[in-house]
Length: 196
Image: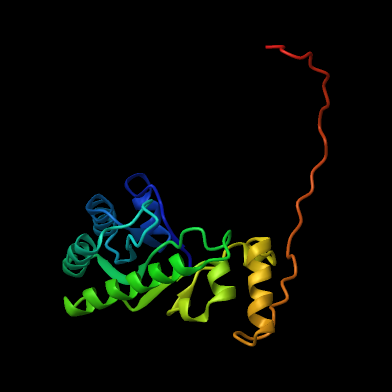
């Protein structure tokens, strides 16, 4: 399963054709995806993105509940998940803000449930959160760079090692790089300083 954030309006038809799971956070997203799914006679699974502190993408709590109701009422959309994006978890030693974000995500899931809206897959964990904090796994993790055998950052690796030594977590995972990038130099030129 791949969950993607797309420029929804322009990519809606392609997302439906691909049976993609798409993160949504605006009414315009829902309108575009719902229309594309209806035009193709299909049902599209979406993941509602909740704003928990990053202030990049995501619906505020009240708006998320309203969007959840719209999804539930749409015959061609299905709410498969509730998600957020953790801010700066891989480049800090203080993960308190990420824990606050997960608490807000839990509050969002509870608010949807109180409104009678099911979001079966709750997820927030990136590679760093997946490696460091099992309580952030919820029902799904979205590993990125760790899937390629790379640590998200040196700080993440140090924090994971510290947690393993303190027996707060299991042993330090062994990540083995699964790819390499290679290229050939195709051209070398001498350019004078200041040349146009």
